Length: 185
Image 1 (cartoon, one colour):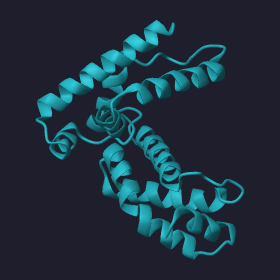
Image 2 (tube, helix red, strand yellow):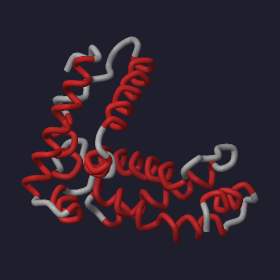
Image 3 (tube, one colour):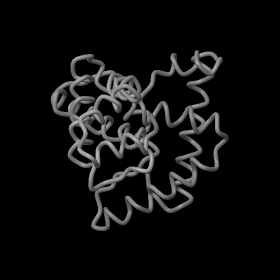
Image 4 (cartoon, rainbow, N blue to C red):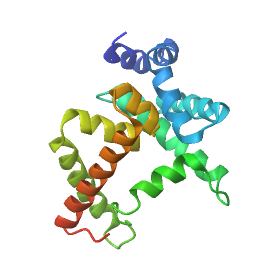
């Protein structure tokens, strides 16, 4: 079923919308949540919460890309649950991702936080758009979806070391771009 048809079901308040959403995007959403939470139960909870959020948000919202919208909701749910569960602990999953990006993403704690976040988003989106498709997919799947380097390398057909090196170079490029745009890191 097409996204527009699924969204139409939400607008009609037809419960079939949830089943169609799960059929089309369930595995995608579960993968994102698992990559962050590392727990099947927590991941399933995040996905179920995302379905509830979709039911409550659509209407009035009408996402242009339902899959991307759900992916963002699931990712945010998983990150929030991970943070709640690991306030005093260290965990390999999200901790590793945040550590890798720590030296190239500035802290948004300023008076102009909201404006700076919008500007930062635009700079990052422009940088991502300038990348080769293969690099952009690698970067987004690693740092947005939280996929493991080994799995990405296998899928792309390169060694894990080569993928890690490519991701390191991409992070360096992002850092240089942000510094050029005036962001202090």
